[in-house]
Length: 321
Image (tube, rainbow, N blue to C red; front, side, top):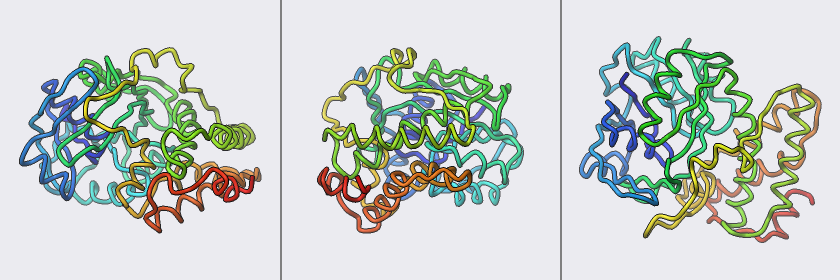
């Protein structure tokens, strides 16, 4: 199995670096300064326990790859970039190869299934940072993270088993499961706090906002009859990935905070809090807090606001609390 990581950002960088360091046949798809730096210097993979500069084959687009039947594609782009990535893969000649959505949210798998027949979900629990163009920093040890992997919409598959077997010795413990979307919905609930951290800044006490967004989401999912499973701090497997510090690496925050810090102009909140809003609108269950959070995230990203640019009082007002 050759593994192609489409999106060598924070999480994708750690995945690609870990696989390459373990000797797996791996290709990354990156762009801009990231692509140039990896081609010139390799990828500097860092964790609390070690630091390695890893040679990594990297290209700028799917059409630069000579695709093989045994390829597996890990989609690691943010949700707002999924459609473009899928279209580029199809245009490049991908057909039956398995697509693994190593992404936050629950909309990517459905989008992929419109293009490709062999789609899998991955519930990603891997704290990572895009520190510099040639660096990927994972903040957990002794493993970078843990992944639940399963076929979409449900079921086990030989491809999921094979990917888990490749990832686990590389330091990302893979768990093949028949109902991966249950844990992906559980991770979605966890990710609803991303916008709170991005707006207020890492370390600001804002538990009441996160709790309110999550409580509303649980009510929406329950009303819609959508099964979800908690993958938060109470999950005993979290002992496999104890979060620590990496010398010289400042942890900016989660994926939404990183998007604001880079001035990307877009943010994945539409596919996190916005997913709860969509489900609520489809099933007649209002989700006003998550709707307000989604609109706020768009305004912050569009204005290229810095992380932590809001006060708790301003955030409460924006949510109508």
